[in-house]
Length: 189
Image (cartoon, rainbow, N blue to C red; front, side, top):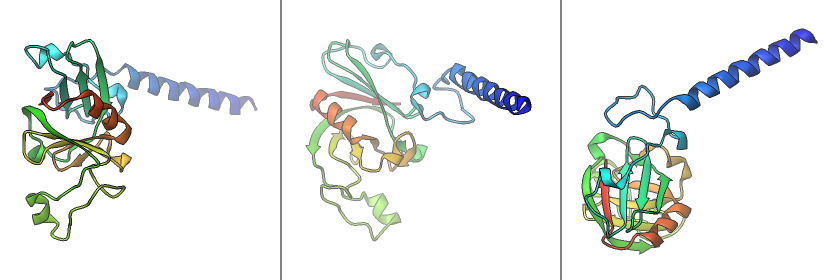
């Protein structure tokens, strides 16, 4: 019985030590090339709106493709929220820079892009509903075919899984949809 307790105590101590080391690991800088990427909330990097925008006056979004998080600030800069996201599957599909929300749609339809049609010629447009890859809400950026949208496939959040878009849980895109008017400034890094 004592050996069993000692083995259990040793295992518990080992697991606790490993968990403590993982929690104490600092987030990697944007320039660092990580061996592994942490996909949970503890892997998010903090950002200040001043690091990305010169002034306030409109809501602002920063989509951090490295830590897979979308940062929101209201027009006064006092309300800061972080949302976990899915990000483009490769750097080739990731457009970085400044843009803005030019259109919003609740219950969006999805149409494959020309590059998707070249790879998947059997894909067809999908109307609003549970099979739509854009989820319940979409905010279209000034870059053609780039969208901040929801997803019904929650396994995608925290992963490289899109063809260029930034995806959020449907509940979170609904919240963000209400907070961000057309004209909201966006930076993708």
